[in-house]
Image 1 (spheres, rainbow, N blue to C red):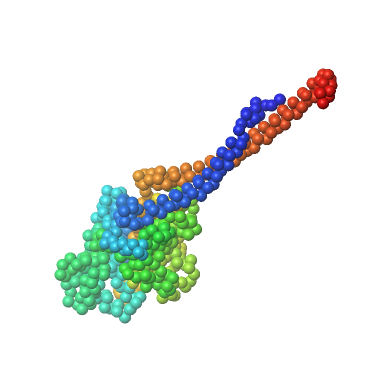
Image 2 (cartoon, rainbow, N blue to C red):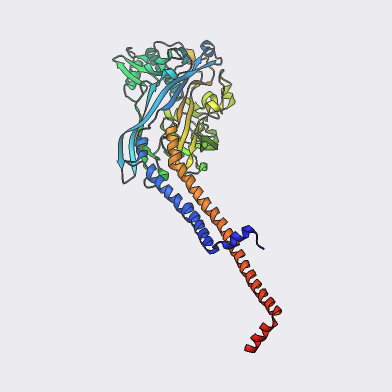
Length: 523
């Protein structure tokens, strides 16, 4: 006697089930597993390339949202002790909040090369309502004087015999400063401008003012016949950071956004080996898709004269999207010592610092804020810093398949490499140290509008593809098993029926021997 479920199997058309199951597996493997990913990739390639007329091109030319740009200043609360050789006590003031807008202008396309050239602009809008509690920008501060220190320390490294010359120029421009600090209204230094007096008839002052008039210094602008102004952000606001030539990704999507030239140069001329001068990576506003996490993401940063690669750290999540987190380090000791990022190929900065002197001609070192992941000996030279990875690490959360950074915050700190200078009275007793000036946080987390675009236009399609692939394969395998079982049971049932009929016939012959006699007689 058959069980009820066996009766169901016996009634099935197992041949049809086997054929349908085989078809489902074929759909899962060939269509959902092979063709659909190719179709999705092809569609992505067409959408992501930055040729004219694509949505990506519009976003590449003008980032359609503002980025956060926050400035933190280090106020020195014990300048007299510092001038006498003591450790600076630093008080962090911030954030001072700006919205940053990025766009590209003067664009020229070359269809044959699949490239575009453009000037890259950053424009800032101050939003004081989003400053730290009680901060307006009118605070009276004492901070490392960026122009004074840049002029004196640069000459001390490169041409120490001209220290008397540059000191005379500084005295005229800044009206006889008595120390290395700017003491005054913060907003003058950041935005409105500090006046540089060029009215002196001294040759040294006139020589430096003529250099300022060259237009090579974005932070300095002329305000009248005898004066310039210096500001860290105000004078350069909205100006181009340089002219780029980049690939559009039509011929090869993995080249999307890759910078080929900067200001007409195919390589920089700052470092001591060709490898370090290489121009590569994107400008940071776009990244190619389909990269493996081990490859990282490379950004060309002209202000640092080099490309830097963000390296994979851990899986992460943003707005319900599974991402990978990458971090960027300014440490150059990982390349060995000495290496081509070492000054003159010999002087290597401490761990966690990038010496920018070969790039900008000023002894400035870049680090993570608060000397996070910097040699502890550097941190010991100052008081008031508290490194915290949550606040001070440079990170990017990528949805890697699309090359989409859904959240990214670049964090860096500018530090002057201070050394005692015997020829300058207010610098002769200084301790050797890296003196922080400020740190900046720049980035954004995508709003719901853009994360939903990613979720519903790409991620959902990929999920449907995976569901179809594995659903068809698993369903097909289950169908094959059911079909095989049904076929087996039906075969067994037919055998049983045949045996039953045979047994019944034998039984009839046994019970009615006359039947057998008639059959024999008829033969």
